[in-house]
Structures are given as C-alpha cells and as structure tokens.
Image 1 (cartoon, rainbow, N blue to C red):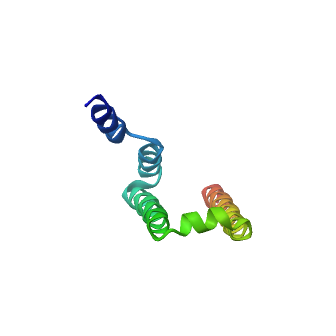
Image 2 (image 1 turned 90 degrees about the vertical axis):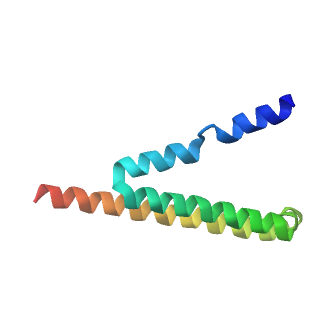
Length: 97
C-alpha cells in the first residue's frame, strides 16, 4: 500500500517537462506551450512504441544502430540550437531598427 501511495505521489508531481512547458508558455505564449506539449508527447509516444515493439532491446544489442540514432539525435539538437540562435539574432536586429 505504501508503494502505491508513493508511486501516485511521484506520478502527480510536476517534473522537468512541466517546467519546460510553463517556461515556453510564458516566453512564447499559448502556441509555444502547445508546441512544447506536442513535442514532449510525441517523444513519449515514440519511446513507448519502441519499447512495446522491442526496438529498444534491439538498439541495446546493436552498438552500430544505437550510435547512428544517437548521432542523428545529436545532429538534430545542433540544428535546433543553430536555428534558435539565428532566430534570436534576427529578433535582436529587428528590435535595433
């Protein structure tokens, strides 16, 4: 019974996803919050599907496949970082005019 109560408390506690959604909603408005929620949920769905289909186990067994996915993810994060920096730079230039 104590385990169930503890699990429920852990589940309902806000985590880093909640903090990120709140931050993006405050910074970028409702659309930013919705996009953050959709991104978070789609990541959870992909991870759950991979675990359900056994792909997670396959990735753990294949070092090469795991490395490919890991580096593709890193490249995507770098792309998003560059895009964000460019957008911030363009925003600053438009405010200076």
